[in-house]
Length: 220
Image 1: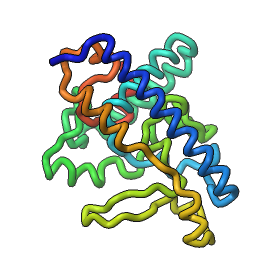
Image 2 (image 1 turned 90 degrees about the horizontal axis):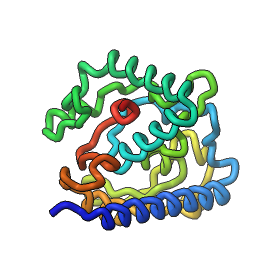
Image 3 (image 1 turned 60 degrees about the vertical axis):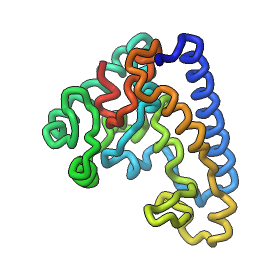
C-alpha cells in the first residue's frame, strides 16, 4: 500500500539524518588522513565516467535543481545545458530507457553499462573551476569516494578501497585507521520503503526505485 504523507515526511527526515551521518564521517576521515587525502576542488578524476545513482540520489539532485532554478537560474540553466549536451552525445548508447532515464537491469544492460560513457565528464562539473555545481545535493557515491571505505566483493571477501590518488605511501595501518563508516543499512531501508510505491505521496520527491545516471536527474 502507498506510504502516507506522514510516512513520507519521516523518510525525508531519516534521509537528512543519513546525510548528516555521512558528512560527519567524511569530516572525521579527512581529519585523520590529513594530507594523505588528496581530494581538493579542481581534482576531477572521480568526476569522469558514468555511474548509477539510486532513487534517493536522483530525488536529491532534482530538489537541488529546483532550488537552483529559484535562487540562481543562470547556473541552473548552464547545468541543464551541460546535461542536454551529455545526453545528446551519450544518450543513444544508454543501456536502458533513454526517454525516462531508467537504467536497464538485464545482464546485457549491466554489462554494457560497465563501459558506458567511461570518460565523460559529469554534467554537474564546472569545467572551468573543477567545482561540482550541485555539491550540496551530490549522490552518495560522490560523498563516500576518496577515504577508505569497506566493501564486499562478489566472492564475499571484504576489503578497504579508496581513491587511487589518496593515501600514496601510507601504511595499511594508517589506511585502516582512516576508514570511513558508511550506514548502508539505513540507505537500503529507505530505498526499500519507497520501493515500488509509484502511487505514494512522495513520488514527486523520490521518484521510482529504479536506478539512473546524473544527467537525467538534473533535467526537469
